[in-house]
Image (cartoon, rainbow, N blue to C red; front, side, top):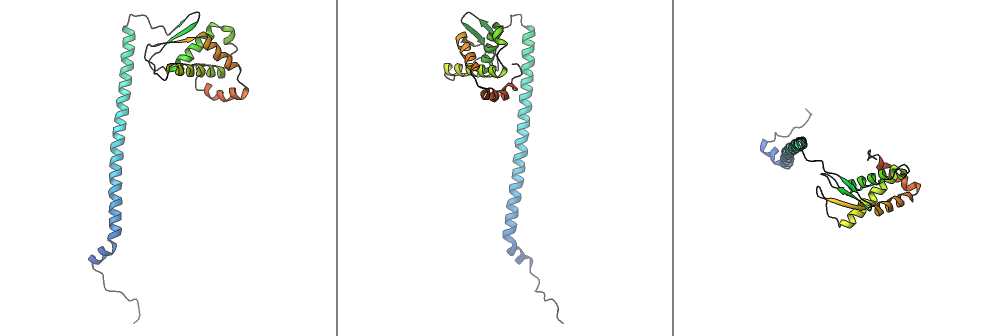
Length: 185
């Protein structure tokens, strides 16, 4: 009879020898996968714990700050002082040079109502950026400290305003995207 010809049955030992490379590769991939999952799980647990700790610390700090302010009988710190020649701004927690420049711009424009009504939001962005860059240059990159007083001459603010009034329409259009990021303008 003709029919399929079967070879003698292979022993289990010869099958292992034949497929040893495949099994080694599979085992290595499995070990890498398990190790990666373990590292990922432990890392995300640490990150979650870190975020929770940070949020709790911030909440506690805010509550402590609120309690300190409520219990304090001291007068609040005056954030700006205007003289004939300059505007003095006091840095608060979280302030950068741009924050101080923004407050100085606002103070200057509020004291000059006729000028305030003609300056656009885009020009205000330009003015505060101009002032912040001048402060950064003047301070040689030195950071701000809480309650540090920074002086801006009215002449410098006026120079920034004059420069903002010379911007062309294309430059103003480019600044429009930044005005949306600063709703307090």
